[in-house]
Image 1 (cartoon, rainbow, N blue to C red):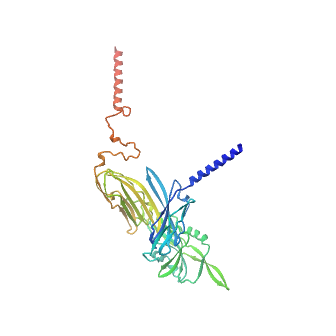
Image 2: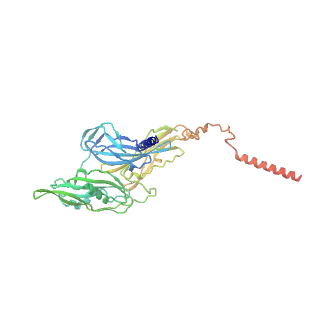
Image 3: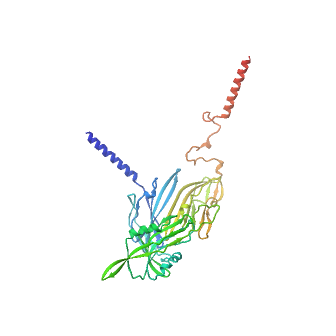
Length: 473
């Protein structure tokens, strides 16, 4: 009997433990579908939002589905902070970018997205893809100048590590691409040789050490038709990432060697002959930023401010919602949350902060969005540029610049300080205190300590006088 009880007790222990572990590892997440009408220059996006709950983004496993007529590109990541009831809720956002392989309307059936071995389906929908606005071929002057020595070999494949900037400013993004270019009129039959072993080693060699990296996350080689120096090539892109130099030290990208197999007929038999392609070394020299009295650590790039407000005309005490989005090609992690300092005229309260980094064409873009609650306390006209402005270094003008709010608000009504409003107090400690009658003071809640001290000293003085008088007598 005791053995049976011990067995069932042990079984119950493991059963409860298993369910507790399952409940603990269960992760709630939501799926967001991007714009369903795009052109070929744009990417279609499927995103998932996962509560952080103290876990690091590296511990979250996920998988996005394959879509017919679309090619997977990189996965971007972001984070958001929502302020609710004085608590900060952290969330992690992963976005899978897809490149359309053609033009037309495509049906996307219901598919599953996996997060930490849990699956969730989205509803089927259609995507409309229109022709691109520009040319599909790529030509970059910086890349061509780097490739001059390889392009001298007419009609020959070549290996290249290219950058869109060789003299970026410190903090300015420069994008490295590692590719094999094969001429359109190439007659050699080529075949990749153990790229799963070669490429990871080569990518580790080309990665700069003193830079912040934002990877495009290429999982397979990206094949595209390009034109360089009026010659057409097929590009096999193996790696692409945007880097932000942390200082002005030189960045040396070494020469890389990739082995390819060439098919040839030898004595009637087809044999694979290994040939090695080498990329030229690449030197990138970051430039320091000029001195600025107000900017010690600022984003560097080209930015724009998109903003909105729930109302431009309101009354004192009324709650307004101000949304700002800073979008650009610089390093968005350097955008600090705007310091909110309430004053005599306006109260501010940050409700939500969200930042994300994502690939767009051949650039890595950043977006920082904040939602701020505004409560005006005094009537009048207010220009929000006095409160909301962001300093950055403009790489186009090569000068420090400032993004400023262009929104004005008009506030009507009576000043809110004519009668204290404690209804907005979060903890309720002072709520309604302005309605109390200050004349009705209860002794055990309030003591006039000065009067009590004076009364005590006077009593002691009277006692001393009485004792002296009695002693003399």
